[in-house]
Length: 229
Image (cartoon, rainbow, N blue to C red; front, side, top):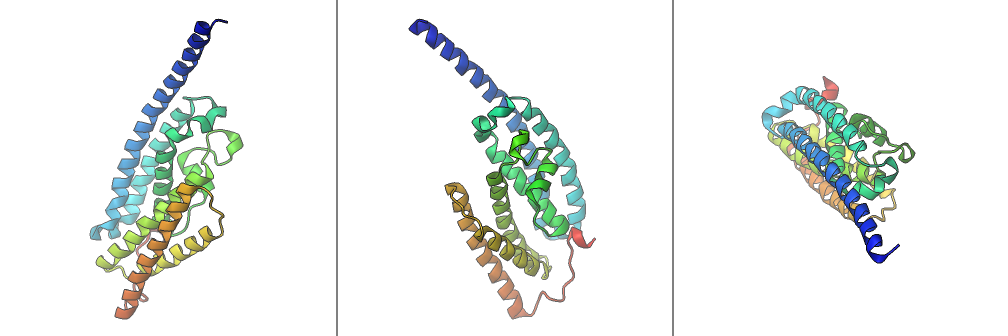
């Protein structure tokens, strides 16, 4: 084979790879749009009126996740299943965001941490690597860490909405989450940096709880989560 023939063949391989990446990019764009729509719905719980409408918002979000499942089903078809990690970087960010949104949804519904298996079911993908398109462990953990930041914000806004018991429950949940992450030996630099941010979320929520305790608020207030509906 001549040098020219070699490079013609290489170009053919590059072109095929670029076509796959372009097809993936188009599907990822639709996923990002759906994720934004879900985020807008969930952001409504931070408003004072939103606390009274959490169950209804959860139902609407569940409906949007059916669209996510359809879009991810299309994404699976755009590349050879054995090349998952070759193209993983193209959907990593949006998948982590979807994990965060799913974990926030489940927290609002039941005030518990969603499992990786449950997130995979919500997204309509696998959680075992051997089965193809799956939810990578580090993507799951990154999404959960984003949940911590959202809950620290929710704790502050709960006080504004006069829902004084919620920050106490959030504090318990976040402290358990922090303890869980302490059990992990995190070597991924990006994941480690995100975990460092959890410490600030814990501190922020502790300050809210301390302020409530000084004012004698929180313990006797009723819960307004989906779990109590």
